[in-house]
Length: 315
Image (cartoon, rainbow, N blue to C red; front, side):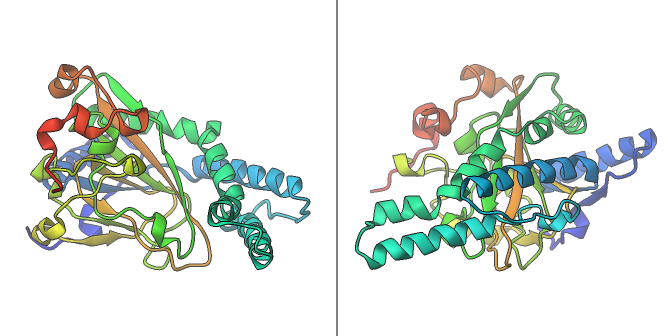
């Protein structure tokens, strides 16, 4: 496959003219078919992202008040919408270190303390109405119907928000397909949406354009602790495809097929990387109908149970 860059995958969706949108959709379909992805520049407007920023800022403020911290959080500085989150994490780390110095905390309690605020806030943010609205955003739904040639879209709302902290490499996903975890339909789409600009420093997504053509890849049986991730047993297949990173601005949307291989980027900035993942499947896909529609590892239906034909022995 020819070498390509993120620019080669970009489509300007900021123009709302109907004729321009039709042309953009044609290009999007072509890129999706050939590379399994495209970058929709300006698909979402700043007001929609700003509303999510506002709500996240409010939840962090409430959590800080509960922790007895009084701090003025900027109202109009969008780049600092999560100001205060790192302060909460530092407070937790200091508490853990104090307990460990006194031999009070064991490994389990230390881990729980260290991530208490961050996990509470991330889980709460997933239920924000402003976040849920993106799952059913009219333009995203329109694109899903167009690109999957369907009138009946399924929305998988589990794990639709990620917060990746600086140097939190142990929580990043290696190269994988989304389908073995989500199990929606093999033509399903993922909309990866950053809540602040992403680049090399804070870890833009790594993708392997064209890898969706491999179909569903063989998998090792999932262990219970790996229920929300699925890594490929042989990553040598990556050499067949370009490996590129996709810098994005807030409001851009990376759209890709659920079978395209991708991996998390490392965050080496001073701020958390926030991203939304909208996942739309196709109820009308023949294989999805045949297996009684979506299963999911997060619904306690492991991939090896619903798709034994793709499981290989790990012996």
